[in-house]
Amino acid sequence: MTFSHDTEHALGTLVRLVNTLPGPNSQVDTMNTLEDLEKFVQEREFSAVGTLTETDLQEVRELRPLFAPVFTTSSDAEAAAMINAIVARGTTTPRLTNHDGHPWHIHYSRDGSSLTCRITVECGIALAQVISAGERERLRRCEAPDCDDALIDLSRNRSKRYCDARTCGNRLHVAAYRERRKASGE
Image 1 (cartoon, rainbow, N blue to C red):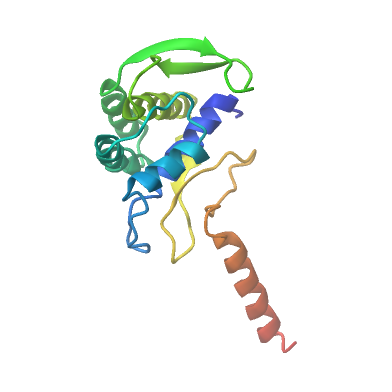
Image 2: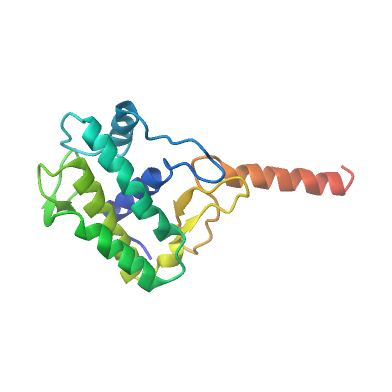
């Protein structure tokens, strides 16, 4: 299943946001300061964002634990209930736009909406599209034993097992290769 560019972008934003939370394998919260939020906004290419405040930071931080369980639920019904509750927190006004050199795409929040509303609605709708397409299994956690990052598997055959952020797959493949070489006496 191929999702639209804006849906894939929103899913990438969501993964990046959820992965700022500290977890069992990563005790570091990487969304602590306004500078962290500004970097996130810049990396994820949010358009027309005014001056960010401590309130924006606090509100965005509060979104993370709402979205995180969607990556571990084993039920479409549970995921749908979570997503519906998340989207209900925002104000949706779908509209077509083509800003900053991007092709036509849909924004689901009003011009001038807060950053929190935009993340809530855009990421929530992207998740709704994943669930409604019957693709919930594409939402998962990294399978590396020392990582718990969220990921969205957009591969054609649903084979992605490791996150992108920490090169987990590469580390595990290199370790397995070295173990095989060691076992064979090379």
